[in-house]
Amino acid sequence: MIILTYDIKDDKLRTQFSKFILEYGRRLQYSVYEINNSKRLLEIVKSEIKSKFEKRFKQSDSVLIFELSGNCKIYRYGYAKNEEEDLVMF
View 1: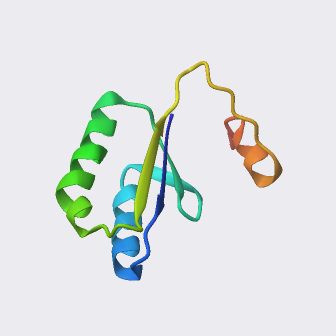
View 2: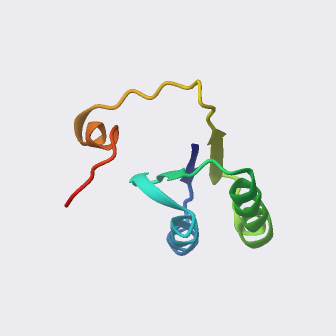
View 3: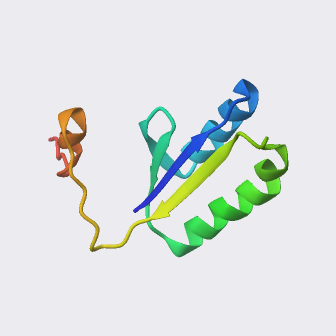
């Protein structure tokens, strides 16, 4: 799993960045996204950030990408606990 989080001050840039990330993952919280762990996907996301967004970031903006391994533990509480297991509906 890859976790991407950002803090972007400019509303327009933040909205564009959010829409971009939603193409590759799903929103966990307002500025925190989960992306399936794929080397190819991670390289695409990093490349797109560099080419389309990095030049537009201000000194106060930040983007963090965490690449989690299979050994990482995730503890979920509240609504997030519902996402621990796959939900199958018939």
